[in-house]
Image (cartoon, rainbow, N blue to C red):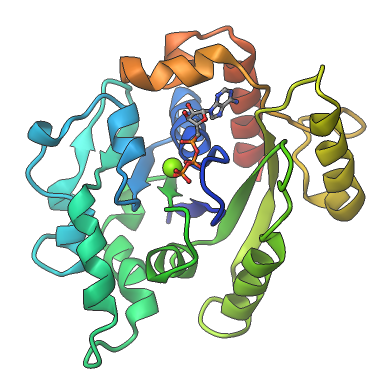
Length: 261
Ligand SMILES: Nc1ncnc2c1ncn2[C@@H]1O[C@H](COP(=O)(O)OP(=O)(O)OP(=O)(O)O)[C@@H](O)[C@H]1O
Ligand SMILES: [Mg+2]
């Protein structure tokens, strides 16, 4: 059975998609069979792997409304072991479907759909939208754990309590196995005092929820790195686009920790 990990934070632009794409690619590089599932109508994960709208007819929307099986929309990528379930702006329409009064178990639709492919993958990595609405709730309900990227900027921890409350509510109700895998500081600049402060705050509040390659080593921090910012426009994860860059190293380290379990 595959391990399902959501990348979530309702704050926008904190590095969710970057983390989902590069963690998925790094796990695939380690020989793991990986499905990157894009469940954000912005479809940034889909685009980041080089797909444009004309490359695929169906997307996760069609799976969620029941007109396609998940296996029917999955695309091969240029990266061995990495497959993609694409999204599309049309996914915004799903919120209306979810809110239909006749719809039962609406939080569990994605979980149900994942069963079909669960034995085909070691990991399913879900990139969720910047909201705590029904799409993200579906992602969290289908997941074993969640990784929360935290941008090392002002307001970084704002709204975090709401996300943690949502996780804890889901844990008490429909998804008791849901764990917080960890917090991933992103866009860290060593020269920036604010970055250092955010990291210090995170270490203070969530020391045991930061990722460490080795005990007693500094926690994994994704640096602000121009190669990371450039790579989506080349349709490649940074681990391929600039394989030895600091950004690549950070995401490979994260994959090492995730594989170790
Ligand atoms: N470590 C980094 N260094 C430099 N740029 C980065 C880094 N991480 C992400 N970015 C850039 O910051 C922007 C936001 O990142 P990303 O799209 O991953 O965030 P997101 O949380 O998925 O956003 P949204 O909430 O809109 O889905 C992108 O342009 C991305 O390329
Ligand atoms: Mg995103």
